[in-house]
Length: 130
Image (cartoon, rainbow, N blue to C red):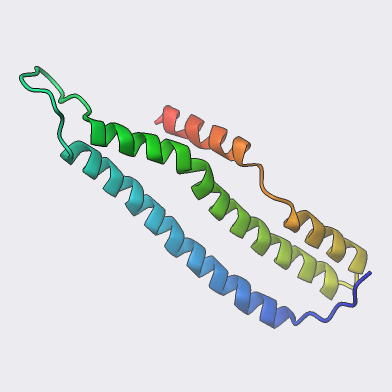
């Protein structure tokens, strides 16, 4: 087992900063979604003379496809950061309590990649429920 030398106040400071950065990323992702929707609707079409809602043009379709294909990457960034922060906090709490085995377990679990497929399914379900 590795030697442990953790500064709980240092972990708290760093995880707080990461939390603030995650909040900024969340705002940027939300703005990204709004901006892509605006760009898709403003891009126009190659058709003319339609009744009702304007059809989606090739640029709008390409933007929609891009967002669909990169959604997993965006969700992974958020999930990876959250799992790392939560794992660092949990490991530190176990370290402070003197349970180095549980600290090591928490660290090991935090290193595992998040399940993006489950996150995508949940996000799509949430979007469909709106």
